[in-house]
Length: 382
Image (tube, rainbow, N blue to C red):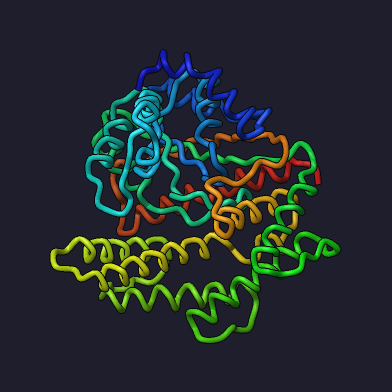
């Protein structure tokens, strides 16, 4: 990290937020929680939800207001998709990469060392991926907790976690643009658009159509039941098939972790000498199936039905635009305000008191972030 360069680039980062993302306001609350922890000399881990693209840019601006730039644990794909000069800028802004599909000891050690001794906070997104569900966290992975506890055990100073909530809200009504996107999606299935229906009804009608197509492909026929139930059954069928095929022992539970284990096995098989072209083709299809599972997992099924706000409708359509229309990033259909809320610090214990301590601490942080999101939503006008 080069702090003076981070300060120099502040206008450029914020210009990208305004022009490229139409984020024209950034509302940051709870600054004192981070500032107090830093003043006391603690190692600081910031654990935000990961609900929209360019949320790291929003956190960079929040860091300017705190007065201390942040380090960011970043997926290696971000560096892989960047040009050499962009990679340099990322590193100067405190970003370093992690390969989440392997045991990346170097990234783990770097993160631990930052929390153990560095004066700058470290940001880890425990959800891992962007799920476009700004009102609801996806179950946190336990990597952040493992890093924090390892650092606390080695450090001569306290290590604290700052649960952090991020959310974007529209400042103007994007409904006309969302309706146009919905029409494009319906037409992609060769359907006649139904503009007379409310958007949330069109979303579920479209989702059921997509789901039926995949059920027919994977299970032989469309299934019955609610969208959320059918999605879970289809996910389980695909993951179980691939676990059996690649002899991966299922531990049940969190789908992204199961997918990660199968991906490791598939990649290992693809890298073996003597793999035939036919086998490589099948392994490529297996990777496509795993990618689809994560896509399907990221749709909760009841997210819009539970509370059909314009933000939830827009987030779901954003995902459809990426997954169905193959957009690299969803279109921006209105000016927005980004909201950041830093919560009260949680002291990371130096010793793991009992078996399962990492999982329990992960659950605690997840619940605190969800609580902050609930507080944000409670403060917004209906």
